[in-house]
Image (tube, rainbow, N blue to C red; front, side, top):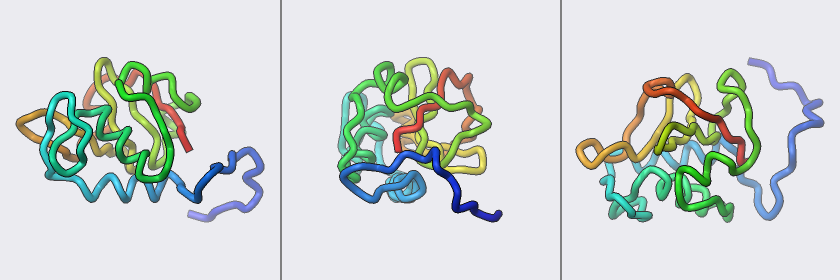
Length: 130
C-alpha cells in the first residue's frame, strides 16, 4: 500500500543501513540448507537461533545465541504488527518473519531451513530488532 513519510517513531538503525526487509530477503537465500543442532553456519548447518543470529550478523547486528535469550532481544511488538525481519519466538524455537504470515527458520534435521506459516505453533513473542 501507500507509505507515509511521517513515521517519526521508527528508530534509526545505528552502524548500518539494514532494514527488516533486507534481513528477510537475505535469510531466504538459505532455504534448503541443513539444520544442525548447535550449528551457526548458514551454509553448512545451523539450528533455529544460530540461523537468526547469523542472518543478523551479516548486517553487523548482534543478538543473543539461544532462542530463550532472543525472546527478550530488541523490543516486543504484537503479531498483528509483525514486519519482515522481526523474530517470531516459540517455546524453544525462533523464526524470522518474512511477511504475509510466513516465517523462514531452521526447522528440523529432516527439513532443514524452510518456510512455514508463522502461526504453525503458538507464538510467545514477536521481537523487533531493527
